[in-house]
Image (tube, rainbow, N blue to C red; front, top):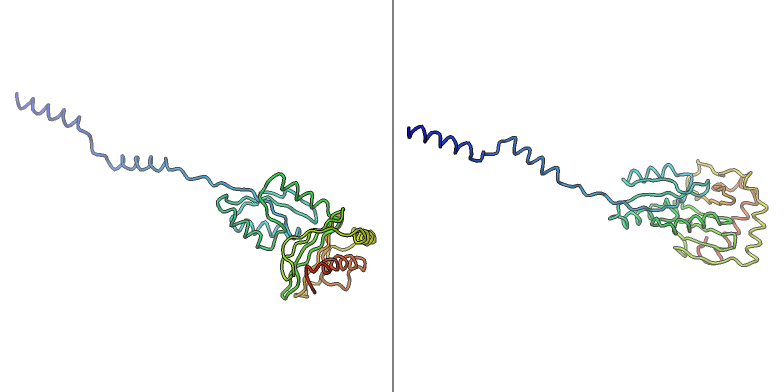
Length: 246
C-alpha cells in the first residue's frame, strides 16, 4: 500500500515540475525577440536645386538616383529654367549639400523653405537676360550672370575668374537703356537653339537666355550679329568690373 502511495506521489510531483524548454519553444522565443526589434525610420530632408543646364534634366535625375538620393519632382519647369526637389538623409544633409554644390550641375542648392522657393522663382521669372559661360579643358572663365528688368545684376564666379562667388550691382541708366535697345533688335524666337559643332572638342559654350528661351553659342561664325553684340556688351560690363579677364 505504501508502495502504491509513493508511486502516486512521485507521479504528481513529476507532472507539476516545470518542463525543460524544448527546441521549438526556444525558436518561438527567439522569433518573439526579433519581432520587437524596431528598425529606426530614415528621416529625409528636402533640398531645392536649380539646374545649371535645363536640357540635362534627365541626366541630372539619373545622377541623383545613382547616388541613392530621392529625386522627388520638378517644382518649376520652363525651357530655360528648371528647379527640382530632392530628398536627402537628414543626418547627412551638410555632406550632400556640399557635394551637390561641388557637382557642377546646379546654380544653387538650398534647404526647402517656402520663402526660399518663392525667392528663387521670383529671381528666375524676373531676369531681362541671363548669360553663363561653361568651362573648357584649359583656363576658360566659368561664371553666370543675371540681369533683372530693373537693371539689377547678380554675378556668380565659379572657376578661372578673378572674383569667385556671388556679387551684385546695378547697371547705370545708360547701360540699362543700351542693353534693352540691343535686346529689342534681336529675334530670339527665330534664332536656333544652338550654334555648335560637336566635332570641335575644346571650346567653352556661352548660353544666353531671354524671353524664356535659352540659346547655346559655341561656334561663333554663324551666330547672328545682334546676338553676338548683346553677349559682348554684357561681358564688357563684367570685364570693366574686373570680375574676370580674357
